[in-house]
Every structure is written in structure tokens, then in C-alpha cells.
Image (cartoon, rainbow, N blue to C red):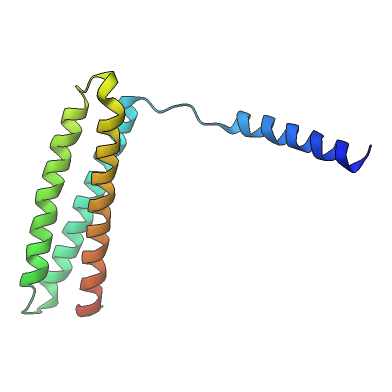
Length: 124
């Protein structure tokens, strides 16, 4: 076999392997369950951060407290948004899905920013 024949065969074999490894599409219910798990994880992280703030004895946590409270408000909004996704019609689903993904990503970034900010000022 020439090198050209080997390359063709490997490309075909690689494609067949990739098809076999493809994941089944996720159902709407599975997606929403995952969203709720992410929201719960964010809530737990905020609880941990709040505990760290309270136990630190640091007096000037008002800015961080305000950010934490704002994030809790955003988590409540995410839960409402997830509840609304259950009844979204199929033609509207792609847009609603994208909006939820953007909201989750935004909150994830804000939680990480808060954690990073606190790590700079709170003792370990």
C-alpha cells in the first residue's frame, strides 16, 4: 500500500470512530436538570464565600456583601428563567436556550470574580 492509500484509509477509519463516539442529543428535561444543578452549585459557592466573609472578622466587606446579594438576586432570576424554559415552544427553543447559556455564563464569571476578589483580601 502506498502512503496515499494509508492516509485515505486512516481518514475513513477516523471518521467512523468519531461517529461512534458521538453523544446522543440531550433532551430538554435533561438540559433543565443540568441548569438547575449549575444554579445550585453557584448557590453553594456563594454560601461558602459568605461563610468565609463572616468568619474572617474583616470589617470592610460591604462591597463584597453587595456583590454577593446581587448574585443571589441573579440566581433567583435564573431559576425563574429555567422554569419558563419548561413551557417554551419548540420554534422558540433555540433562542431561549442561547439566552439561558449566556445568563449562566455571565453568572459563572461573576461568581468567579467575587471568589477571586475575596481571595485577595481574606486570610486563608
